[in-house]
Image 1 (cartoon, rainbow, N blue to C red):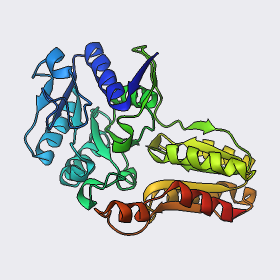
Image 2: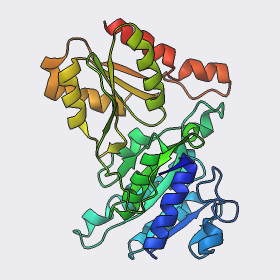
Image 3: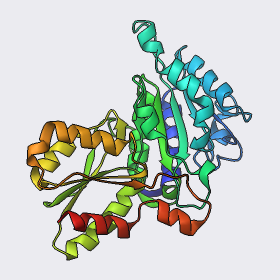
Length: 324
């Protein structure tokens, strides 16, 4: 084990997979000598050269399209977007091409690519640099969607994503890049896609969440503990496919559910979890399902307004207390 930030763990995962498999390569804005906007490719250009760590022009549709095409020819590209907000420009390549190809060709080819992108707010970066689009792409058959919450999971999930034979969207929250944690050094350390993690056991309420909200949920749980409310926290880790079985098992124990996410609630991950629990475990609930997310407005540039729009520890505590 070694202590690394999440950005370093992501670089570590990519390096290990590039050493393991010569078909793995990286492309994106400033991923070469600069090492990426958030340091996630630092040192890789120097080790692997410009043929496997390729700086791209500001043309997201162009280089994501190139990644899709090369994946169809048995390469394993990792395309990095500098900000997830520009995934809207590349979405045609992902939704109409990458997601459909395996089905369209009857399974005779696959698209083993990863698209990495930083997501999320709490940085006063305004509406065009703070989006989280995981709900959008979870709607699409053929795509997998992953959001790690800590350095170890970032390494293990990214390695699994690179080895997967399907297109995987790997979203990394900007607030987590510099947070350190223990990361296994084993190059075969993998975290399976589609398996949630119970990060805190409890008996009174289940908090199903992911990415940066896992940390907020932990802080809220410590405060709720003083009130005699024992919260169980589930880190979903993978949004598509989603491990709803772990959530349902927890709800059957705690009899209450809080779905916590950073972004908007309309047609959201929280909505999906709520629907599945309502279908499969409604009789176990002692209170209505609680959903916590952003208010229905663009992310403000003002830090004070952003804190008002987005979930906070205080708001999580207050709304869970109201369940009781």
